[in-house]
Length: 78
Image (cartoon, rainbow, N blue to C red; front, side):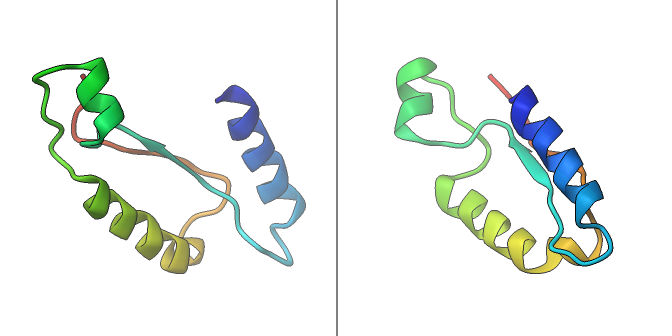
C-alpha cells in the first residue's frame, strides 16, 4: 500500500502541469465473498456494485477536484 501511495504522489507532482491526475481510493468494508469468508456474519454497509459505481464516477470526475490525494472511501471497517 505504501508503495502505491508514494507512486501516486510522485506521479501527481510529475504530471501536475500536463495531466493526467493520480489519486488513491482507500476502500473500507465492501460486501464481497472475500469479506464474508474473512468475517462471517459481518455485513458491510455498501455492496460491490455500489462501490463499483462510485469508483467509475470518481474516475470520470475526480480529476477535476483532486490530484495526488489519498482518499478514504469508507463508512466502516470490520
